[in-house]
Image 1 (cartoon, helix red, strand yellow):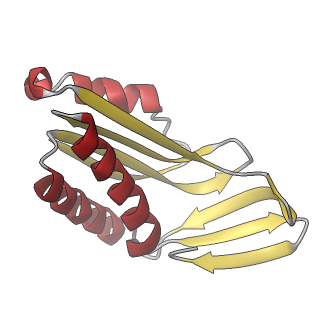
Image 2 (cartoon, rainbow, N blue to C red):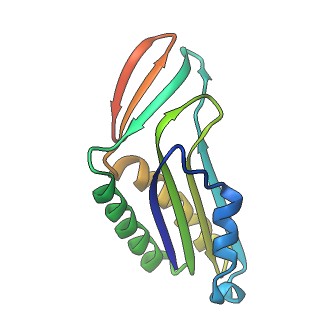
Length: 145
């Protein structure tokens, strides 16, 4: 099973909710590992602070379809059983979640590898625009930033 959603920041889906959906799948008894990831807004790094981020996509439906394709490719490559990804759009403050991912598989090695590939491909392959506002002023970062 694959869950791939691009949602606005007012739709509240937690990592717990997503994990529970994965655990309710009929093939969960074939799984020995679940790995999760929650990408949050980092408010400080050595060179600047971030007060808020505004994340958008020119075509959220197209981005969601591409996300689903990525997940299917990762599932086929790594042989994992179930995956769920939620990527939010909207305005976010430091500590707010923007990206949730859950992968369930038979063994830890392929499950962890699948999660790592999903994280990297979502960052670099999906069409997002990120506006950062903070101590360095405003900065627009396109996909891959």
